[in-house]
Amino acid sequence: MLLPLLGLVALWNIFVFILYWVDKRRAAKGKWRISEKALLLCTILMGSVGAWLAVFQLRHKSQHWKFRVVVWLSLILQILSFIAVLGILYLERSI
Image (tube, rainbow, N blue to C red; front, side, top):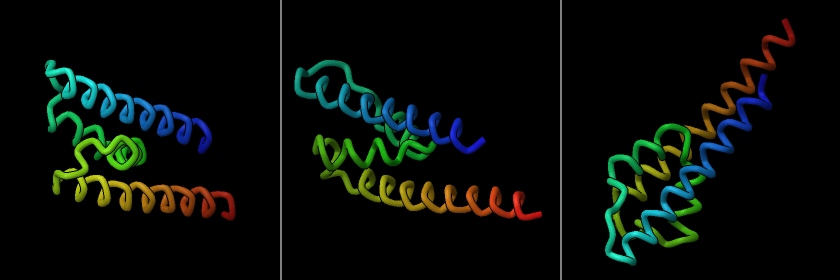
């Protein structure tokens, strides 16, 4: 059960990273952009690792305080949720 979940989260984070990359490319070319709401929503919905990599590796949206705050808070919450899931799975096995 855990491996498929991790696989889905990994794919989602790759998608979120690509979304930030596409937005950065479009910004450089002066084209239509992906909305900040969409980027932040994807970040909050378990995409914090992909967003964190994009913000700090691509330097995209790194100057916007709300992106820094949302990315860090989402990353912390995502880590805590994985710890909770692991704890629940461990408790189910021990019962």
